Amino acid sequence: YNGLYKALDNPQFNDHLTRHLTGHDKGAARALVTNMQTKEIYSAGSDGRILQWKIQNDEWKADSIMGGRTDYQVYALDVSPDGNWLVAGGATTGDLTLNYIELYDLKNPRNGPKKIPGFSGVETLIYSLNENGAYVRDQAGMSIKFTDFNSVREVVKPKEKIHTIAISHDGKRLAGAGASGALYIWDITNNYAEKIAYKNSSDLTAIAFTPDPRRIMIGDETGEVKIITEDSNLAPRILSGHTAHIEEIVFNNTATFFATTSRDKSVRLWNWNKLADQPIVLSDGEEWVWSATFSPDDEQLMTGMHANADKSSETIHVWPTKISTMANSLCTYVNRNMSKDEWDNYVGNLPYERTCEN
Image (cartoon, rainbow, N blue to C red; front, side):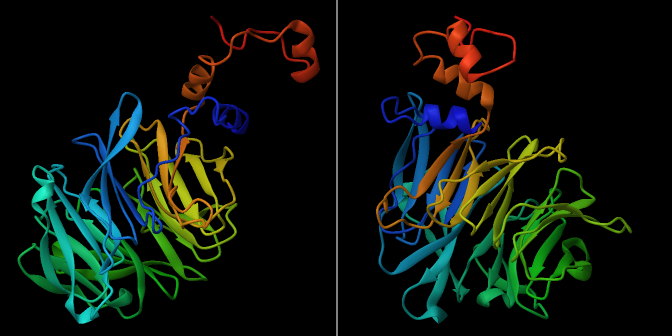
């Protein structure tokens, strides 16, 4: 992977598979989400912008849904299951008691958002799969609220700070990452009845429901990732390698592999069906990785980066996910194969073959 990526990332080629995206020129792309219905990606940042990304002639092009703002920073995005609505949350730079979330009609995004008050600071929100509304982690993690975009009510008053929340694939359960290391599960269908599914030795910072409904993935502040099997005595499956706070765990759209992002300035790409295999480590060693999403075709992983002083506009980094796609693209730039002597010198004992068949 690394050899192909470094070759493909040659400035002479400027290949779309590795081309970083610009648009959030005053801060990190704190939130990324993919709309599978429209095959688009949305990004938002601490500059207040919300951008809509579409593929045009093999290039990602951005349209502005919301321009830059100095009075509101966006930390979270999600799309409705039908792909028609985008909900955004963050914090106003003024009086936090006047904070709000925003709802955009994606059929008419330039009409501007509907503002829903009743929040003090939002870093996580999830569009409900079964109800027309969203779950919001509010009050710095001390409250979980539900809004139908007309009213707001608190549905869970946690016993401790919750760092992030996730919703199950059937939309019936919420999971919360506790500051004490507790993995909370709330049953939406049973008046949010609570249980603790696992107790970790350090703060939990990331959660994802896996393709297997019995298993939940967690990440903690030390960089450890674990797969928990609910209601069993099985020991957690540990995925090690990160060395700092896990920001997000994100599955691709076909649930065949997933990415873990970390403040150790790296992203790891794991094969869900071959967890014993080593992950692909994506890293340019520049800045923290805040957020991630996969392109609709799963060919690319987009990561939102903490702004680098030298590259403050390149806050969405793009990583190809499939080696065969990278190789095919690289072969369009290569004008000959290795000679037998070159093969012997650089490859070694493997049987000679044409690197690019045509």
